[in-house]
Amino acid sequence: MDNYSSGVRAVIKTNMGDMSFELFPQAAPKAVENFVRHSENGYYNGLIFHRVIKDFMIQGGDPTGTGMGGESVFGGSFEDEFSIDARNYYGALSMANAGPNTNGSQFFIVQAKDVPDSLLSQMEQLKDNGFPQQVIDTYKEAGGTPWLDFHHTVFGRLISGADVLDSIAAVECDANDKPLSDVVISTIEILK
Image (cartoon, rainbow, N blue to C red; front, top):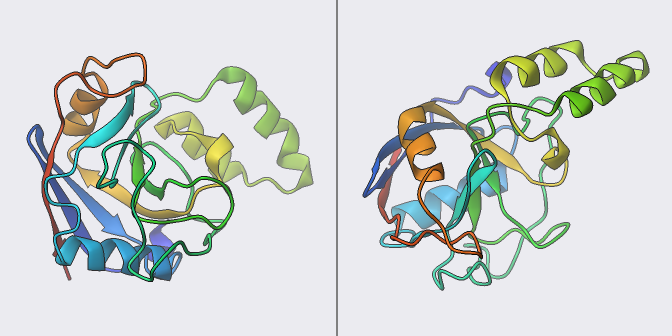
């Protein structure tokens, strides 16, 4: 993912602390533009992380707080942007969607620290068919959700605030994975 180092950063400030991300405009230009413009115009201010699943991910960006709302800055949804080098490793900032090419305003941050051994074994078997060893090694070391690769656009990665991510992922939730006490995004600051 170093191929996508851009110098563009985002700081998601929450009532539980701050998380900083490096964004990948070369890998996912529309997703980054959408996130940056929404952040700069205050769209995300005051929204909650409405879906939190420990050892998987935390999801936000929906103005309705239900997981059913939100739209892109382009009006409606926009297409997926996949890159062989931008994967859903631990700390990945990815677009939430309702299927192919349905990106709006919702995003999630991967919090899975481990990949199941059975999945790593399957990835190892694919190595002979060109599956990159570096990707397998990074998933082994960093964790993540490889089953989401090429289904969800990765447009950034966590560079600081892993303790905040893990704390948010550990909050108590109801049966629908909604935190019992709101985890609120106060603002998202873009640094260029």
